[in-house]
Length: 307
Ligand code: NAP
Image 1 (cartoon, rainbow, N blue to C red):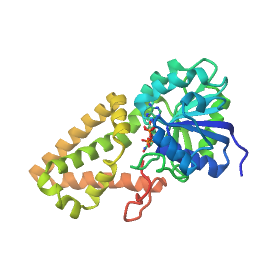
Image 2 (image 1 turned 60 degrees about the vertical axis):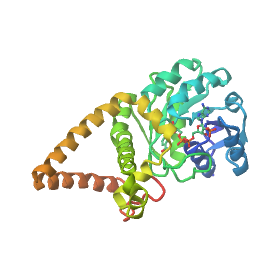
Image 3 (image 1 turned 30 degrees about the horizontal axis):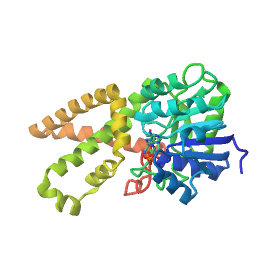
Image 4 (image 1 turned 45 degrees about the vertical axis):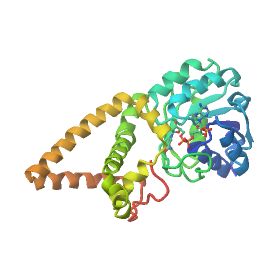
């Protein structure tokens, strides 16, 4: 068992990411006490029932009292409001971090509410599933996945080192990144692909004739993968797009251009274009497997974990 990195950690929001953090923290013996708070009485009750967190509090302020680390695990669109709620109760010298999928807007929303005497170190674990809620977490979620830390200017070096040690203790590989770069990279690797999956499943749903039975009965790997991604939490993803507007629109613009080029190749029978394009994209897949970020299993190794 490791020496705890923090005496007291508070998880605000008790969904997939927070519950996975709790189980991973416990697995590694990384904190003395972990407290938790979620908005609804129902989620707090579930958390108490399944032993999620050592203490569940009925207000966010009570949960963060005396905490050395506070982790905001709520949808991106409410981060600012939650920060305003907890600010007066924060312990001097505490570290405040978040797990939001967008960084620039979260920094702008949360930063102004925090007192000067705490350390704000935004973060983002690149790990998730299409499931949500307090029952969906598991200790292995972050194993060998990247967590990006996005320190704001003047962040305390020791506070960053402690947070890095926590994520590493939870199994993650940690890197630091600038917030705008983070938002662009994630628009390419996560946000635009989710929008495309939502769109493809929406198109199938519009074709009512096939949706009722055939799309489900004959669903092939391509469509099945889209449906898994498009089953992700609607609140979380609404907030991601509204808060990473510029980068997502930039990538979707490029996507549309490429789509038109492929459309033209199909129309004109330009097989060489299609073949070359698909050969190039195949190499990306190989790169991801070689980097240990997915497996070569025939089900794409995605039965449990995705980014
Ligand atoms: P989730 O499973 O849907 O859980 C969200 C939690 O936030 C719930 O416990 C919810 O409480 C709580 N919450 C919502 N509004 C709140 C408010 N105003 N005050 C207090 N609590 C509130 O979400 P998640 O997947 O863990 O995502 C959490 C964060 O992680 C998001 O910012 C997301 O962008 C980021 N993230 C997600 C993934 C992923 O794949 N899911 C990956 C990386 C990062 P109730 O249950 O009471 O409504």
